[in-house]
Length: 250
Image (cartoon, rainbow, N blue to C red; front, side, top):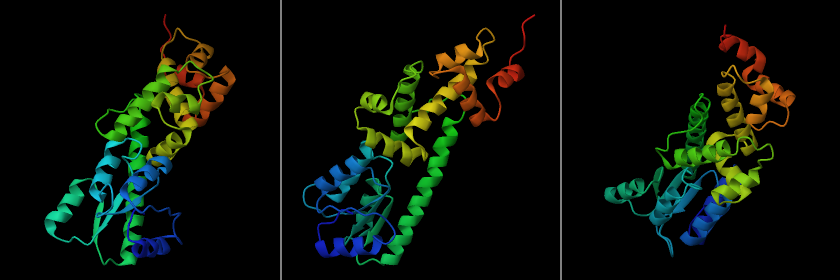
């Protein structure tokens, strides 16, 4: 919650606190910094703020891939149509004029979070296809493409850690975890494992490689661990998959 009016800020926090974990800021600069540090699920932001305005906060949130996915509800006393249009054009998901109905705000937040969950499923479906890299058409897709590229570049490393990936992206482990969790509903370790297994499916189609060679090429510490993980994801063992998809050479 980013709001400089203490009474309004306390009122909204009081209404939302029974349903969500809420943190607050009294100005745009602090709110923007808090958003980048904590990667919240949603932001409620006033338009008129000291320092950065609400519109500037939203613009910067959308430009930073750490926070680009976060839904934003804007609150304002400005109710002219062109002012509301300006708010939506800045990237806000919802524009509410004061005074507002707190029940409507609460239900709007629930709807936005539900829509975000649907989008997570969309991203997960995109990443479940054989080609794991996502086309960088949007800021969030660009982030996932960069994340995927880092994992693929280090695919043979059995010791690749979440910290290693975060360092390559120039962010903290916590920021990376929260971003991936927000976009895909999964942990970073599970994401890395998914990339390894997707790549393994492709490599298994090469009849010249053994199951063990595929396991080591995709960063698994042992062929047995690879077989267990592969069967858990695809409900078929690597050897069975290979037998189904590879035509023996005469």
